[in-house]
Picture (cartoon, rainbow, N blue to C red):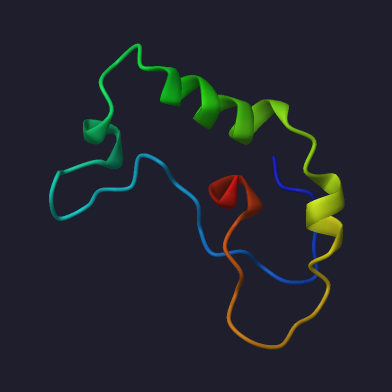
Length: 69
C-alpha cells in the first residue's frame, strides 16, 4: 500500500508485460532469491521516510521507491 503523497509515482507493476520476454518475471526462475528481495521491497520495508520526501508537484512523476530499492 502506498502512503498518500501530493505527487503521484510512475506505476510499479513487476508483472507488467514487456516486448521480449513477455514478462519481467520470465527473467527470473521460480524459487530464485530475487523474488524474496522483490517481495521485501514491495511489502516489508518501511519506506515512509522516502515517501515523505516526495512533496513537490513540478516535473515528471518520480519512479516508485519500491522499484528503486
